[in-house]
Image (cartoon, rainbow, N blue to C red; front, side, top):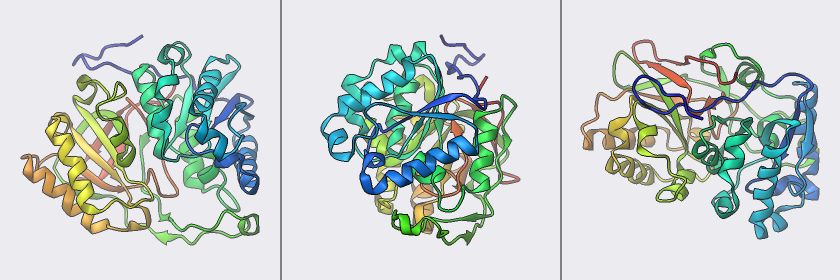
Length: 353
C-alpha cells in the first residue's frame, strides 16, 4: 500500500480526482446539526452548491441527518456512515457536514482496513481532524478543507477563493502550486437563520503571510490539523508514528474556542517534548479566528521555539486554512514548500491522481 520515498518516509496513497457527475456522500462524524429542522435549509444550501457549482450528485449517509441528539448518543451510527461511504463503490468522495467536539468517540467503531481498501476523497476541518487521522492510519491522503454547513453553504454564494481551491485540489491532478493569500477574510458569525441567508458577512482586508522565523527554502510532507482536536488523539492508537513527522511541514490552526495563548505554548511544548518539532522542516499556522490573540500566539510560538533551540526553524503565520473563511485545502502527505525569502507557501504535487 505504501510507496517509499528515498529518505524512507512512508507516502500516503492519493485518491482519484473528482469529475462532474460523480456521486459524493455527506457525513456527520461529529455534531449532527445538519439534521436539525432549523438548520436543514443550511445543509440543503451547501448541497445545492456541490451540485450546481461542482456538478456533483450528493447522497446523505443514512444516519447523517438524524439530528444532534441522536448522533451524540450513537457514535457508532456516525462511524457506520463513514464505513458505508468508504465501502460504496459508487461514491467517489466524502464531504463532512461540519465539525464538533467528540469525533474521538468513533474510534472503537472504525475499521481502518475498510478505508485502506477503498481510497477516496475525504474532506473537512476542525473536529474532522480525528477522521483525517483514521485515513492517515489507513495510509490514505485526505484533505483538510471546507465543510458543507460552513464554506459550501456560505450566504449568497461561495467565496471564489474557496471554489478555486476545491477545483485545483480535488478536480485536477496537476501540481497545485503556489497558494496565494486571500485578499479578504472573515470570521464574522451571522446566526444560521433562513432570514439571514441573503446577507453577506463583512469581509476585512487580509495582511497576507508572515515569516515568523527562518530563512531559505524548505520542503516537507504535510501533517497536522486543529490543535485543539489533536489533543484528543495524543497517546491513542491514532497518533501518527514518529516516521511520519520526519522532514514534515506541520500545519496547525486553532478553533473558535480561541485557546488562551498560554495553552498554545503548552501544546507546542508537548510537540517539543515528543521530539516532533525537532524533526520538522517547517511549520505553518492558520489565521486565528477573528484574529483574536493574533500577536499573542506569535509570541508564544517563538517562545517555545527558543526553549527548544529551534529559532531558525522556518515558520509561516496567518495562512488561510482552518477556522477562517475563505480557505484553501491541505492534502495530508503532499510535498509542500516554505520559501522564507519570499514569504511563499506552495504544494509541489497534485493532491489526487
